[in-house]
Length: 396
Ligand SMILES: [Zn+2]
View 1 (cartoon, rainbow, N blue to C red):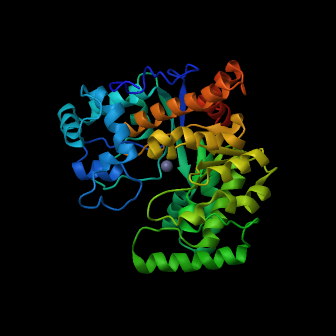
View 2: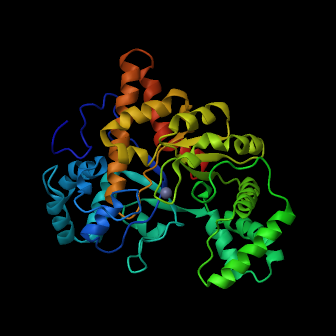
């Protein structure tokens, strides 16, 4: 692979995926202003904790991908040291850098989860429309986080007896505007979700406890009670089924708020089974390192989709290995591309470039050993890159 290439001409691309159209089916806004050295380093990691002293995040797999693939877009040589990269970035300014990265990523549609806020209030993130405006001809749709809807309902509701219905009504209303729902229940209660909704008496009691706690703490409501989380998830299933929205669920690795083994998607099995036949499609986000479990669920249940994003960015040159494991069982019509980019526009470019290269390597190997026809590999790549998302989210 040439040192100066940012993912453009790739000699390992045996099946011609250099210009594969991509829909980013799960991502976040980027910082509208400059990123300090420490902010940039923190955003290169999924940790949530500050970068430890003596650690250079540019030496991580993702940091190396940025140096290799993004530096040439700023007029630098591939693999320049992080210091030089950040100096050039400051020189050009945030808007110019973002436009260069996002345009080179070759993503034409962004599904933006607006529930993840900026690291600090003084560093705003782009809205979905602002993000789309960075790329000529691109469009963006909003993904609504269901726990945020419940938190806003709690902030507004006076009586605990009204809260269960308020959550249900607000989700039904939100479903008319969003392209998808997203749940972060993996972070708050884990994925071992019961196969049926909690009874109303338990939900009312949990509502009373939560509202009392909000009143005494004077902080913004944060939904952590398992009964209310399960109530919210089941309300979302009903609203999503009525509106025809898919429900994205975070699974697999995340920041320090997450207990990894509670985010194994196979813990969702009872819920997946209970939802089957109710008219809602589930999208298991990220999945790594449980992507084989997720692939098994997609293989077994026709309403389960699997997202190959996030891990691809963080495992760098091992992305073909991870993608190959996704493709062991996941049907090609239910595997989806995303970057899960957040804060840094670089993450769109690295996510897209690593994905195209990894998919080309994996499908190319299937073709090379005679297992797949070239035409089938190309068709599968188009499905995974954009067709599956276009059909699933009805964004034709
Ligand atoms: Zn995300």
